[in-house]
Length: 185
Image (cartoon, rainbow, N blue to C red):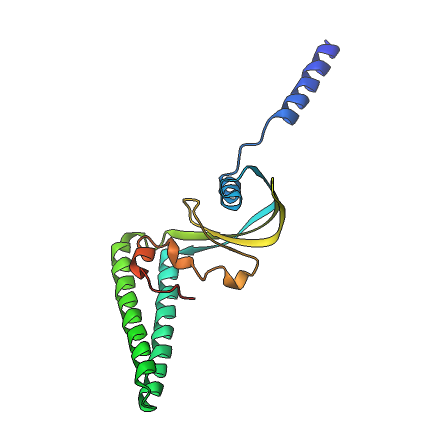
């Protein structure tokens, strides 16, 4: 009986050691993003969720960015206008108009998402890992990633301060609204 119990215990330990851990969807999304369809492997050493942002917070941030941009463009327009530099003044007037249109578009998107304002727009993670392909091996140390709840990666950077520059992309319709307008900070 003792031998049977030992054998069952040993089999249980072996089975637990051989059992594969369920794949982490965040790790899978990182792997797909980093490998971009190439054959290879991606191994995560550490992965930590460090923050989350709601649509409400993201809209407020984007609104502030566009308002600052409008103020800067207005100052530049006025400066060139008073210096009688029509070509430069016209360029900044056009930038002011594009920014005003972006603010209107942002207001429209906010109205469309009114019922979802307190939902999570994206999560911030920090990770370390290693990617290997036939061509190269890349180490990732303290790399930050911004990812929607649907596992779409919005941005990846080694500088945390740069992580949210493209955060507006988590807002449905944001990219289409901007069209050819350059991405803001």
